[in-house]
Structures are given as structure tokens and as C-alpha cells.
Amino acid sequence: MYAKVRMISWYLLVSCGLTLISFVHASSLPADGGEPGKAYKACVDAVAKPDKAAAVSLCFAKDDPWIKKTNIDYFTNETFQVAVRIEWPALRLIDVKITGGQLTGDDAEISVQGTMLLQREEPTGDIVEVDRYPVKGTVKLQRKDGVWRYGGTEKLER
Image 1 (cartoon, rainbow, N blue to C red):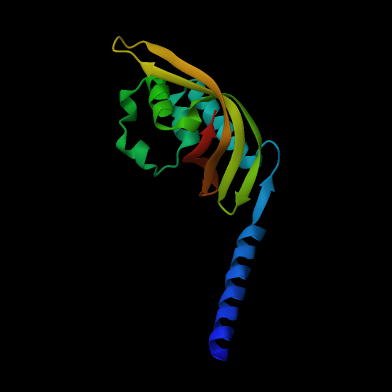
Image 2: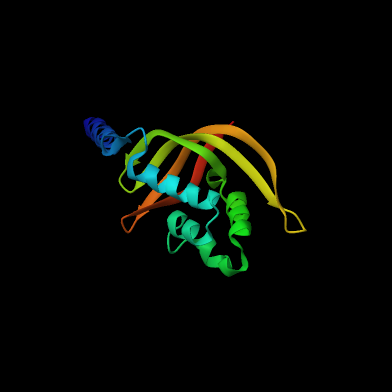
């Protein structure tokens, strides 16, 4: 009986210690989001411009599966902008304001607010705005090979 209690105590001690270590490694980012915030802002600006080459370079990792399966040459700058915004909600934002975030190793979660812009391409080739509304939430970024890129995940709410 004493051995079971001792083992359970040891297990709880180790579990709590590992949980505390994970909290210790997370650190707050400055109000502008630091390096991850700058990378996200550059990515969103490239999509908004629209600049297809810059968006690919600044938003996506070299081995990004979506980029690998997408025929980039098929798109004009404008139609690529629409395709990216349809696929990745956090890249639809305009008037982005970064308000801080958390950094854990090679993962960052930045707090953002801005205007969500919804667009579509008409059969005529025209690009039309469908809707726009304010949102706030978080966007994840990942550092790969020393470079921050959009992580493909976000929690954005009206």
C-alpha cells in the first residue's frame, strides 16, 4: 500500500513539474508581436497588395502542402489573392492591429484585430467584395529554419 501511495505521489510530482516547465518556457511578446508579429504583418500586406511572389515567400514555408499542390502559375496576382483569402481566414484581414502574444519555442500565437474582407471571383473574371466586418482573436505562426511563417491556424471572432 505504501509503495502505491509513493508511486502516485512521484507521478503527481513529475506531472506537475512538467506542466510548470511548459508554462515557464512560454513568454509574452511585445505589443507589436515582436518578430512573429512583423512576419505576419508582412505576409498580410503582401496578400493585400496583391503580390503573388511576395505572398508565397512571406506567408508560406517552402514545404507548405497547399503551395505544393497549387499551380501558382495559373493565378494572376489578383486571383491568387482571392484564392489565398478563401483558404486562409487570417490572411483576409485588412487594417490589422497586433496587440501582443505568446511565444513558446518555435511557436507563436499573436493577438490581432482588424477587418475581415470576403471576396470572390465572378465567372466574368471580376473580383467582387462580398462582405467586411471587424474581428479579433489570435493567429499562430511557426518558426522553421529561423524564419517565421503563418501557421495556418487562427481563432477569429466577430
